[in-house]
Length: 178
Length: 161
Image (cartoon, rainbow over all chains, first blue to last red; front, side):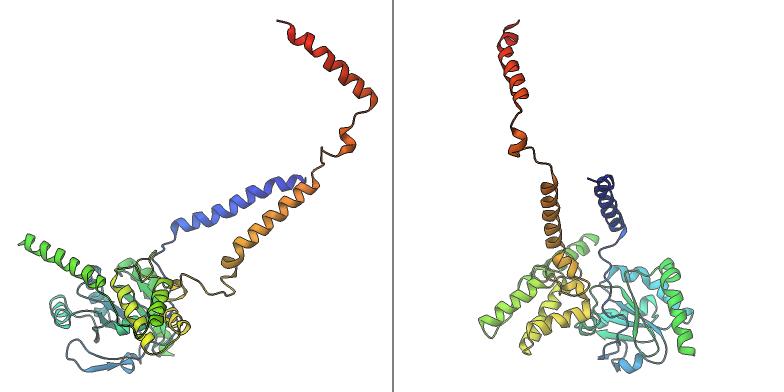
């Protein structure tokens, strides 16, 4: 048997070790969204503040963050101040009030300030289902044509915004400006 | 006051469990019921990752069950229903991944490893210079004589203290 053959098990071990080591730092709860680069699904739902009907057409024109939230979602309360701050900086944020009580949602937005340009009331979760939402908060980044370009699952904090979302949002703004 | 709130929260938790437990549907026939069962066991809950949606109490799993029931009612076939879920939640929701360029290794990898291992085994066994061939088992007259001499010596050796 050739000498180099003795190294085969070591090489195999090294290969497996590399994959397993990588696996240690992967988060299994982070699912790649199936919706990336797909158009935002069509919908006709009431606005949570005044009940007027909102459709997909209302999303178009400018890039936006579409934030899926609910009053039952504790983590949404955590990220809310940052959303307010971003809205203050002129970031266009659209809310989807996911499987929630509309009265509670109104109260929440009155008490904690409303960062949303408008807030879609998705009481039975049908829009959420079409978006592949499996919890809250989840945030989609859509371009001016209403195509979903990025999805972030979990609480957006200052670091997440700075490192993952801000540059993408800026790029979409530039894209829309051209 | 806090106690009251805690109790209310606990009760709230209980209602969701109870709700999931009475999540029953009226099916047209037995075939539809078994398709529902098959689909809910084949699709994975996106929130609670190691459960299928039949098994899970998560609200999202209940939503997906309801959606499957609705799609069955609309006369969609199993493939269309699975595609509907995959379009929204990605390949992840399949417990039985589709055979594609990305998944062939998953499907055939174990078989390939088995065949590969068997081949290596066969090659090693074939190449090994076999000690059992009859040509080498017989001794030359010289060797035979030495063997007999050694064997004759042995009783004397072992009787020594």
